[in-house]
Image 1 (tube, helix red, strand yellow):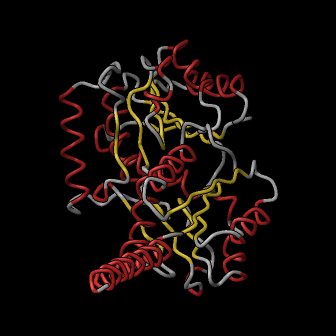
Image 2: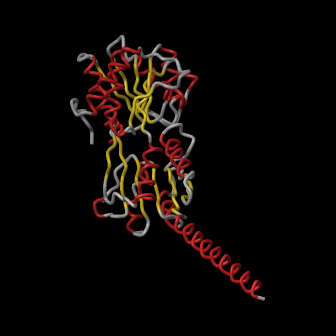
Image 3: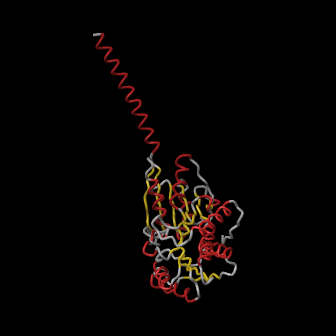
Length: 337
């Protein structure tokens, strides 16, 4: 009888320990999950540019237990409502694309939700503690690209083709022009606004217009349908500098005309900002961060190991030296901001 009582007591203790730790584990899991994040892009994925870079960050976030990530494409329509839809089901909403400017209004209506505006400063952010903006010093990367473009140019005339006038576009052109003139004070930069940026045939014609003006290197700021510019470059023996992503990798058919690209690593900057909040509860409220070459979120890239290298090692080395001088503050790159 005593043996039976002892055995019963042992079993009771074991079961108690099991339920204690089992219950504790359940509470820990509940605490760890769920930071619900929704990434909203003003246009669509598949752009081989900023949207796809942002999605890479979202996919990386998914590898962390307790973080869920959803995506919304706006196709440039009904953006405010889609931002509100995202806020209804999320702890954090991340918006990519200047067309998401109404995010500030949504942040006012959803004070318990965190909002991050990427690649553009949010309006009225100083009074929005639940909002932060991640922006990039693309002018610094463009400075290096301009230096390389001027070194590679035989005519001394460079071109830029942009979808529209904007702060980011002007920032690219400002840095590009400054870097080009560092390499060659007599260089000329001719700028053109695309006639129909979503139309590759029109982009080709615009590229040919710049060629007719003597340009032999073009900074291609048209991200939606860039192949037309590359076609023009191939036809007229020009070179192209890409932006936002590694365009030599994204457009391998035109590897032989793309010199390099000014890359903005949205994916990693988004990942770092979310994980800083998730792991350390650090939230940069009402803050506009500006990340340049020193942060690693802006860089000059030349494709993969299998890409055709049009830029010599000597010119690359010179650009690397300039990059260090910019990072150390020895060279001040002008900005359009």
